[in-house]
Image (cartoon, each protein chain N blue to C red):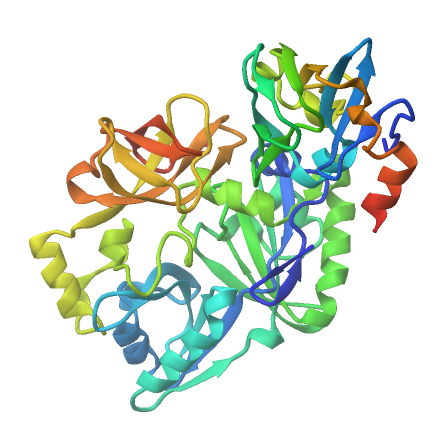
Amino acid sequence: MVDFAGWNMPVQFSGLVDEHTAVRQRAGLFDVSHMGEIRLRGDAALANVQRLTTNNAATLEIGQAQYTAMTRQSGGIVDDLLVHRVADDDYFLVVNAGTKDKDYDWICAHLEGDAVADDESSAWAQLAIQGPLSETILARVIDVDLASIRYYRFVLTEYGGAPAMIARTGYTGEDGFEVYLAPQHAEDLADRLMDAGTADGIVPAGLGARDTLRLEAGMLLYGSDMDDARTPIEAGIGRVVKTDKGEFIGRQALLKQRASGSDDRVVGIEISGRGIPRHGYGVLTADGQPIGTVTSGTFGPTLRKGIGFACISADHAIVGTEVAVEIRGRAIPATVVETPFYRRQG
Amino acid sequence: MGEYPDTYKYSAEHEWISVDDGVGTVGITHHAQDELGDVVFVELPESGTPLARDVVFGTIESVKAVSDLYAPVAGEIVEVNEALIDAPEVVNDDPHGAGWMIRIKLDDPSSVDSLMSSADYRKHIEA
């Protein structure tokens, strides 16, 4: 167990590779109750979400979610998050554990008009069941038509007599669900999911596997791959920046950066030989010139190679470029690659 | 599982050494591999490399961490376990046996006397 953003969390249960592989092939259960939940309500809720985030929340249908970012005037990322449209005047934001307080303060400081923001984090536990057998297993425990919940859609339901939400979202690159429910019923759901999935080989999974899974799936981690000083364009998530949707905090800076190009970019890298890139390791050109640093890295258990993200100068941030990673004093050859590194079949 | 052979000696850095006729076989303990998690790379020096006591002679890397390997005694490396290049997970499966890493010809056979017995090592990891 380790301290993760003030929460006592397991790094692993049966073993990182075991858990990672189980999620890719069968199912894994994660307790992700540490995540933060902030609700915006009121006639001006959408207007505030639009002003606070970079993606276009106006395109969301009720029961639909989107990945987005909150940015500063500078374009720097306050946090990356999911916005769920619960109703026309009700938006449920799921944010990172370590930034939840910062996010809530930021939202409150910028709220305008007829809208209120509530920090509901302590009212919600969250369990993520991820892997190809997720739907089969969850269906044995929850009486909801899961097959009809499309990717990045959610439904409101109840569990243990209290409100619950089931979203087809996740941080692993596999099919799966994130279930939001009352904390007092979370252990019960977890136990029932483990029982219901035993025959199918469900395993409990910890932070270690969560990190290797998300990395292989090309997903970024706030705090490692991006922070207040990095824009979504630099971070490689420019796809969530919709400057045409209307005014939002940071829009001017991002428009400018889009027009003139950024100096640095976060890209995927793959080690050509033997070695694991890790946060902070230097990245060099093939002939030894420093061009950036690794922002996160690991040994991908499914891919069986060293992979990671690195923030490097834009000239070299082109897929196919040969670079090198400084690992314990030696320049180990690597290549800039497309992400995700792994894509699930079907 | 938690068996620490009585014939081995143990270092504070969680290595074990088993001496036979002036040559010590060295590896990491069960406790060390358990803490590390799934081992994916082991970097070892070449045969013939002289080692001073307590120097870093290599590294062992799991998915989540890198650890240095420390020489428990001074001597010259006479053999390296090449099998660990392609099968590093053997360190997790059999840390006290097939997961051995190097064999050292000891400069001084009595240099192991100051290392811990299995009983002392068990206390060390429980502390």
